Length: 105
Image (cartoon, rainbow, N blue to C red; front, side, top):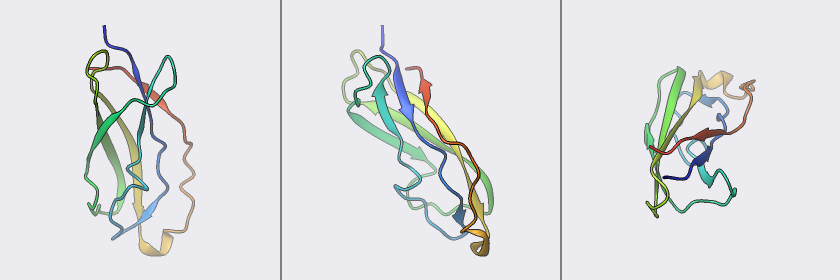
């Protein structure tokens, strides 16, 4: 039976229109939910690093692929980002941050 992976990924702050997504926004972490230890592996994001998004609110999706597939399975998680006009980029996002548990699939 696969162990549960906890994906920690805070909702990023607003970004200005024209800003490319980078590791600042796409920075999820995977931990073993029972022990809290980091699980080795890699994330794939949609949209990808380097993408430019239009103004508005957008879903960011991640899929984590653990290096050790026994006892772990891939896990998925999403969060949201808001793209604002360049002049409003310094405004606070006002969103809460936190982490969520994602069950292995």
